[in-house]
Length: 202
Image (cartoon, rainbow, N blue to C red):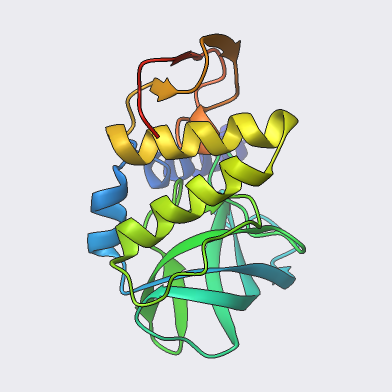
């Protein structure tokens, strides 16, 4: 009889692992194409399950929309997302600010990619309107580079480089090599070292 609880524990772990297959890092072009809505904004509140159910918790976050890059949105939208016990995925916690790549799911939205669909960015942005989403996001990164400093400036540069090279760790700015936990959170591998090369033009 003692084997029965062990069996259910192993089954739960296996189910969670299958639900959390490692995601391939998408390019910005793919993220934009597959999204029905792309917005910049801040998470106002987050609610979710208190207990794990088959290795996952369901959450919902209300996002205050500051700007829409693709399609239009109300001032506040609700985004549903999942937290897995066995692997990292994007989290939408209160006060988080960033870009949200979304698709409609009933009256709510879900991240177009569970791992990369929310991208933390600087609050600086370009004032241009009516641009292609890819061009508009790239201009925001450039504006952030002009105004930020320190660690945030490095993150801005990595984001711009990622948008230009589709996930390649060859970025722009004076020669610098640094270990980071993911290339601007678009490459969540803990021991990646990205080298910033001085030869790219921003």
